[in-house]
Length: 120
Image 1 (cartoon, one colour):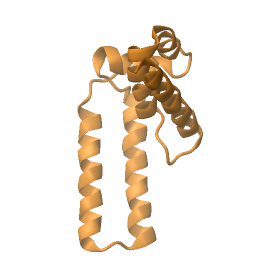
Image 2 (cartoon, one colour; image 1 turned 60 degrees about the horizontal axis):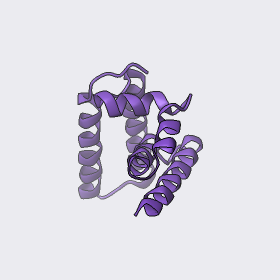
Image 3 (tube, helix red, strand yellow; image 1 turned 180 degrees about the horizontal axis):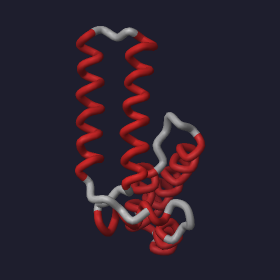
């Protein structure tokens, strides 16, 4: 199982790096999954990821405090609002779909807002 978790960890790191450059893909959730996989497979890779200059601070903040930085919260909420506006005006969804997507985004926003403010 150690090899499986190691491979999954690197897979999630790759997805996280791709997400850093593509606006439609998240970065941090994939890197959090990578840390979880490396916890079960490679303490050295986990330490590397948590001490990474760019990705390390938000990962450590989440792992230690369950926190999200205020800047990241603001960016996430603004991007979700912009995404919903693009969805609404770009596709003219059926009312039930518009409500469903709004409910999912509002739930996600509430989760993000209720996390403690981080240091990064």
